[in-house]
Length: 265
Ligand SMILES: Nc1ncnc2c1ncn2[C@@H]1O[C@H](COP(=O)(O)OP(=O)(O)O)[C@@H](O)[C@H]1O
Ligand SMILES: [Mg+2]
Image 1 (cartoon, rainbow, N blue to C red):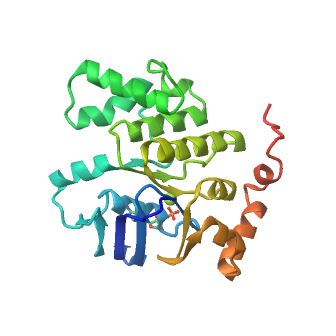
Image 2 (cartoon, helix red, strand yellow):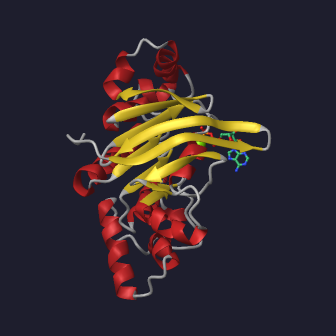
């Protein structure tokens, strides 16, 4: 983690509701430049909703989000383009366009931003593929890729506009432990080589201990606990203990316990 901590994102008393359902009930969170923050919490607790506010994809019902000190809460839609280039999202499930090639998928945000120079686009796509360790694979179609490769392409698309911060919505979901570890390496490389700030929603505790500088735990629409990964492991807070202990006994049990045994053939 950086020595002097420069505030990058500040979430203040953020509230969000859908009809009568209160999803965020006053989230307060600080994210520092160049750190990796893991966001944990039960399913349906509002993690995805929270990070959508960090790049202006959702607007708060109440409260505010500041990026580098700028309040983005009431920015008009046209002013959100630059915010989304700065804070980029890798969506849950990857969300690739199946009818577009890998290269076209990665080029998509560049074209959306109005870039037309073919050479420049090709160069940026090729660099993004190098970053995710898939050089030269522009021509492949998403259907021909493994789950892990699709995630890499989604990550390449998230970094093609050279963001300052990347939001990852469950990048480990559906991946085997080895592929998860390789995604973790990419996340840490982005942090180390490009000083990218990472905010990662995950249920994979092994990944948390591998990548997190800090951890924030969401419960009932607020950040109920935050600390370092070390503090997470040592916490006596019953909710945290339950979460840390609970994970190996749920659906990820076989992966957690037997990382080297692949029975899928
Ligand atoms: N656009 C939406 N419209 C209505 N309800 C939503 C919307 N997005 C999320 N929700 C609801 O908000 C709650 C939190 O969702 P989410 O942030 O996706 O949880 P998670 O912590 O699993 O990511 C869920 O009950 C979900 O159904
Ligand atoms: Mg989610």
